Image 1 (cartoon, rainbow, N blue to C red):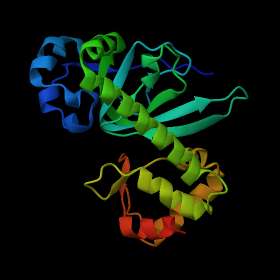
Image 2: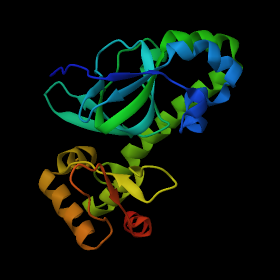
Image 3: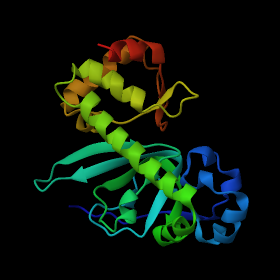
Image 4: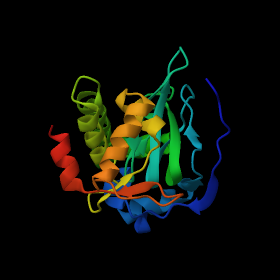
Length: 238
């Protein structure tokens, strides 16, 4: 496995009261009186594009709430191959292994610039001992991660549809948020790794979607496409 130095910029302590993903975040069940005493322990971090947030096999001591951008979860296999097993978007929680003292099961790599809140797992466990609502929220995050993992297997795996159908399903899952018509833009190598298809096939399917105006053009340096969501849904239905 190739290790890369983790790079991040500390932007200060996180301010939960102004967080744009507060309603989806782990601490959404805490009121301001609960958050004020712990604010000095929450780190607001900025990661550049294509940087490592956490390494597969490392022992975690924190979880991360994605505030802006996306993190791809990459699992490296013994034979040197890699598999992209998920994508974390704003409001998602990364590093759930920290709650079970297990090593990270995959590496988290940023797509474009990412802003994330780092929360020490010891802090969460301490709060959860006294707060039933937070314990339920942790369980909800586990359940959401399991549902997402199951959806990746059932909707995107080979055998569940043509490459074109699965590409449409994947792009729908890569939607930036429920309130916009943009999807995160991955390279064809990543798309192929997600769907288990060749780079050539991924490139051909993506080019066809652009010709059909299902996907709009992306400017150099941008990490998202505009998309015709209705058209993607029709294709995804098979």
